[in-house]
Image (tube, rainbow, N blue to C red; front, side, top):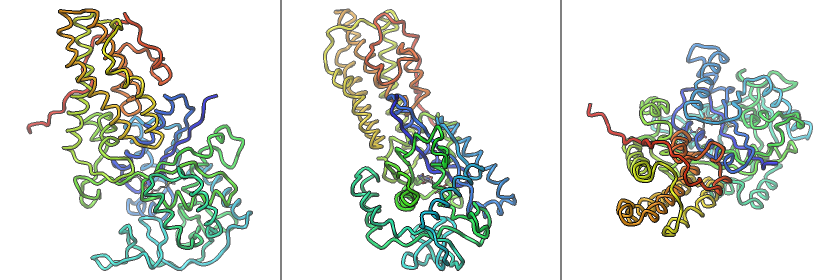
Amino acid sequence: MKPLYYVTTPIFYVNGAPHIGHAYTMIAADVLARFKRLDGYEVYFLTGTDEHGQKVEKAAQDAGLSPQAFTDQISTNFAELAAQMNITHDQFIRTTEARHRVASQAIWNKLQANGHIYLGGYEGWYAIRDEAFYDESELSTNAAGQRVAPTGAPVEFVTEPSYFFRMSAFQEQLIAHIHANPDFIGPVARRNEVLGFLKEPLRDLSISRTSFKWGVPVPGDEAHVMYVWLDALTNYITALGYPDENAELWKFWPADLHLVGKDIIRFHTVYWPTMLMAAGLPVPKRVFAHGWWTVEGEKMSKSVGNVIDPAELAHVFSVDAIRYFLLREITFGSDGDYSRAALIRRLNVELANDLGNLAQRTLSFIAKNAGGVMPVRGKADATLDGFIAALPGQVREAIDRQGFNDALETIWVAIRAGNAYIDQQAPWTLRKTDLVQMEAVLAKLVDLLRVVATLLQPFMPESMAKMLDQLGVSDDARDIATLLVPIASGTVLPPPAGVFPRFVEDAA
Ligand code: ME8
């Protein structure tokens, strides 16, 4: 039986058009899912849309549509984004589905039966944009004189009856869990942030609202709808069949990884695990929060007009180039800035020059001077052997801690070594002096390219499929285990064609 791996993205609010921030999380999760599949795991990969709450209700009103018509439309845009970015999710969940109402009400009933829900009244601040409650002490006043949350979102004072989740009762258990499981929250800076937050007494969480209707009704008290985050977090188990713990997919719980942006770390590492503890369910194994993208140095916003549409970008640069750039440009976990110039630089230097040239130089030389077949291995210099042997393990180690750019850097060190190796071995000279050695050098380069292309498939699936075709690697020999089976000498290599053209900006 294959080991299991369950990875999720946040479910995205359907209040506006998707942008590169959303694409980023989807792509990172997709690289993990693809890598784990390549490495012999049975993977389940979930993404979807978060469709309830006041923020979505308001966006629907502004668009002059009913909430359901509006969410139907915008949810499709996110599903399209996933297709455009070549995302291989196994399921796209929508929180307006009937099965999700069932699951959300089931977890509510469970919390209630276990004595962790009580009726009270909420009096305090709420930010619709964040769908979050804030304490008076967290607020400040912005330039326009508005009271705002630390995120900059305007807050309003609400007074209404509300059910509460006895979150405070789980504070000690949660802290102990974080200490006992050093990998539960990543990166370390976020783990420290959460532990810092937990130094203060945890308050009970308001989990229902009465001032609007667009949500899952509270079982037994339909004047209330559930707080949107309670309903949203539950998506991760709805998707696996909850409350039916005999469902086929339930074997994937607990999740191996919830990948989220740093904006929603508290919901995933405090609210969600305490809810699960209260419901008697296992908590996810790991939550990793990535950083925030700005665009050309500025926060992305509709009013500034600098929101980057990933589909448009893919049209100009190719999906693989964007996937590569987003995971290469910054350390996963840190903030980053998107700039067109940086994207073009990486595309031209790393993809076209380093990798594209290594493949093109090697394969066109083989086509012209070695009969267009996999050359015969021999006593080539051992410079590249270490890379060929170590890369799979090094990349696995980096991916397992979500170190995407470390994984890519490790691969690029090997690519640069490959380019230096050609220059130094000069097969064009060996062609005149030592044909056996020439073949050995070329075979070594093909072996290196095959490892590189195999490990890069999760990042750039389309272009690496083309490269593996040109390297004569059959479809059933493209996973990590089959790297151990070498390409047989004499295998016909199809005529090479460049995989990464240089990008030249239009003069216009
Ligand atoms: O928070 N940079 O949904 P959301 C990087 N529905 N990532 C970004 C980004 C940016 N500029 N902008 C968005 C919600 N993201 C809830 C989640 S989960 C049970 C419920 C990504 O539509 C990032 O992953 O506001 C962030 O966490 C997510 O989109 C927020 O999407």
